[in-house]
Length: 301
Image (cartoon, rainbow, N blue to C red; front, top):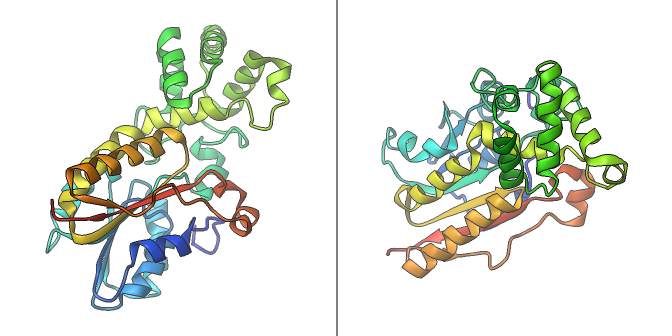
């Protein structure tokens, strides 16, 4: 799918460009390049003397990003990999240092809208949720293998779902009849578990459970921790790092990592509080409403 065919738009693009300051000759690492929205804007800023490294697990996204970036220049390289491997990947490149690091932790719109990827309860499809379409284990394996307690702990820990025990109980009961293999069936089980009152709330009853499964399947928090731990060794002095998160567990990790680095002297925090999308962007792209952007500058420790 091409960039033009997808409905994905880079979140907080103006704010990213302003705070991270990609400019002529700089080396940029986009750890979650997706369809190349942020990366292409930064490639334009850095010119022919700069370089962009884009990383993503999704082969489809990488193909679209390549087409997007090739329209601008050839001073880029794309790697299929996890953003938690950024330090290892950049170590293979000349210079082994970046001036800008960006991680956008959101699931892009094309992934959400493609029912075959299994991310969304709004599109019935196989219960997968893997960023790498061929990766294992997928969400169906977790849902059908974990014990009731393990499921409840996962849903509560990663989804912050207060009805986690009841949802886990309904899932385990349902899978004794037949394995749960589709997003539609899982969403229907969750709706039955939460009851009619909860189903009338603004947020769909399956939202937090689906979030928890996606985080677990893709090891998202572990990978974010790895990225944050290694970032100070990747960035050149004066380089800047930005992270766009979409849920509180991620944002908390970023906030505490930057604050800890500031106390130890190697980060200067550039965002005292997270930057949120403005009203115009929220209206144009409702899926960006929960985005939070934090940034920091590398200082000599």
